[in-house]
Picture 1: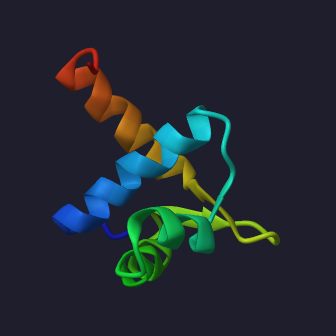
Picture 2: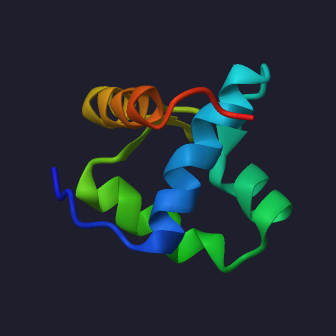
Picture 3: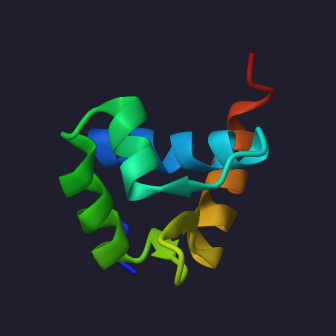
Length: 81
């Protein structure tokens, strides 16, 4: 896993679990519709770096390590408003 991610990639990493937590399953097309086509290269990069995984239906989720990193960071920052 490549832990070097850009600010844009980081924003996507935190956006995905917030949408999944809201009960949505997300594909790359869903995120492109929601955030714009410019998100596609970020998604490809995050898939390549091991931050995101996609199942056979192209639904995106954080990898196990990414979930831990996001959880740890949120705990360190305190409650989110």
